[in-house]
Length: 471
Image (cartoon, rainbow, N blue to C red; front, top):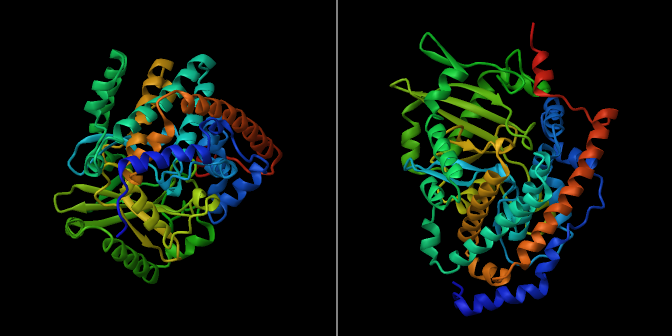
């Protein structure tokens, strides 16, 4: 077992990292000499063919939705920048919509990162830069003036820096137990408007439960619950509304395929704690459906499993495909042996508290998957309805949550704090980066939209695809 470095040695290592990557160089956007359409096509390989146009359709709504679905572009670009050399498992897609509220196993509502599809060993700066750029792009999409966007980005970056300095003073166990609760968020809110919004969000989250979802997603007949098709977003893989194409026949072939699915589920059960296996054993599987989620994940395999216990109460589990991380593609850190395990381990490291049912398995066709609850008081910010003042408050909370995640996952808060220093140099560089990358994102979006209009890429909206199923 390696000897633990002293605090002074760790601070010195952080300061020396400035020689490798001066803080001012964080304003550089990197290697943008690439074809965004080609990279997006490569990123769509292996997805459900009929759903790729829906992915592009959701990305086409605005430069902001395009940014959310094109993490591969920014990872490519960041690979052309210098970094401090301080690495650990990073989120890989830490834009502002990948933070949110959810319940801990102890039923406490907390705020944290909530998407880990791209988690991988990488430079911590990549997460911070993805967050910074997302606020600049979202602010421009919302019509916020440049000066206010500047303040919003700087606030997120300064909060990340300040909290990292605080966490540098914490012990390892203190960091492991640190949680950003909604009550703490209320105490930290700068305005009464912000405090009221947080309280309303808590009330809304309390109603987002498995039971509230059951009547909306499924119907009961003769004591059995069936998930209702709502294509293209929700459909049975082997049913008449399926969009799986040649994969559909595998799902409609009964016993052999069901046996393989059962084996995959049994394998998943071995990755969760014994008491959770005992809990799941009290539920009966009623139905399974394919669910399209998010922007960047559209076209990957994602299933919803509906379980019911003897009291008629539901449990919804989401089974989501895990593909190679875009961070792993562009940062030399070795490939994961199992992509689902990569997501689960990264989530457990970065989150303050993780889903009770978080686990992984390999599917019948050799695809990698991870499991989690579909909804458990989970809630996301309605960013486009925020004023610039509220968005700045939200930026502060995201900066706080990201600093906490990095401090826990990497155990490198001392080194990062020493690298950042106490001045405003890093925040200034990241603000410049955010605006520069927003400009690059707009260029990429324009190229993408031209490809869609010319037919080089096919883009279809949810509404267009839903119309295909209406009689």
